[in-house]
Amino acid sequence: MSEVMVIGSGVSGLSSALNLQLAGFDVRILTRDPPQATASAAAGAVWSGGSLAGRPRRWADDSLAHFLRLAKRADSGVGLRRMRQIFPQQVSLPWFKDRLPFFAKMPPEELPSGGRDGWIMDLPIVAPPRYLQNLQEQFLGAGGKLEAREVASLDELADEAGLLVNCTGAWAKYVTPDPEVFPIRGQTLLVDAPQIRSGAMRASDDTYLFPRADGVLLGGIYQYGSWHPEVDAEQTRDILDRCSQIEPTVADAAIIRTAVGIRPGREAVRLEVERRAGERIIIHNYGHGSIGFTLSWGCALEALALATQVTNADD
Image 1: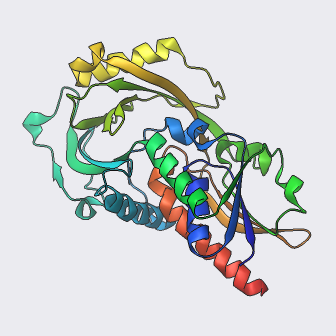
Image 2: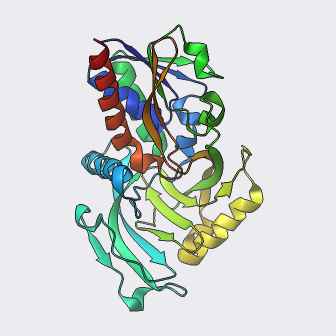
């Protein structure tokens, strides 16, 4: 099959590249940052189906099946953890409740102060450094090429490949360009707290604790419109304070690392084919907001389907 050039090496770029490669495409990744330095590496990376509908629900469902398979492998970077999700109001049961290994409503007497409803469930949680490394090793081990290169505009690549897959995340605002994309700055910290075996998400203020294979991830921060790349010490203290309200022992836990990631905000994910002058074809796969891991594998499968469709049509 013909060469495909994937732009970006976050979870969307690596997932797309690997699926294309497995289908027989010759794939090359161009990336400004290595996978471990992308926004994906800083993500909370819990599977979160929310109230998704339509295509996003299908993408999330496909990703859930993928992560549940990987959770059975100790080396995958994906684990299955018991989670509590607390809401300040009554909520409907989610569409995915029967797809999880365990799901139940929280008894009223177990709800913390300020919580009016809640769920207890077993969810896949990804340790991004390990998972991204695994994807990269699979891709390179099968003959894929990864080139460190900053792309300022997709038009730069007009003479290099007939088929591009655009996984540039928040930078799609400038690289594509797409004025509908906006940054959502996030900040997390990973702590050494092996005593915490189950996690929690508090919807009222976006506070979460995710026990993963590499530590317990604490968050979260949502700063709309901010590109600021540096860790904010005051936000770190705020995250610790909020998480300590849920699990007091994290207050004294050793901090392994802090990280900032710029999420790619957009009213809707852009996953579609664009044809540009000179017989160039671009498959856009960006705009996943704060649920990039939740949508990643399903979107990659659809990107592959689109690539197969346009390639067959041009033969």
